Image (cartoon, rainbow, N blue to C red; front, side, top):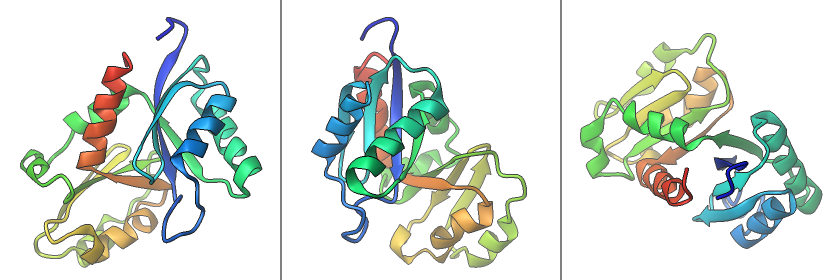
Length: 185
């Protein structure tokens, strides 16, 4: 990686869900590369990428990437950028380390901003007896042993927290961390 380049993890929100807002990962890589990014690698079809860019302006780069998708595909997904260190801190802050043994049952919501007045009581009222959650800064952690698809709480996280967010399971977080580490990040 060139020394004047920054590693980023890009999390796209709401693409390739239920056949809507389709964006094949090969196209995503091409769009990101056309926007000045290098060494773009993707993971699964839900909008996860590790990339290098000379741009250190997080908001400017995220806007440029979202705009490139909008111009090519006709929709504009939210693009959240994390540094490898931020992803690592989110992993280190996991309040449920024993839940990593079932990586598809532990989810992290990455928040676009600090929540001002999160309604955690609303989430507590929706929580299944087996579920545990915790909000730590810009990360919301949910351990849902019965599965995320059955969780009433999971469906309401973003509304209750009050800021835009995108969720990834622990397996995806670990994979992105490994990809970023492999990129020198």
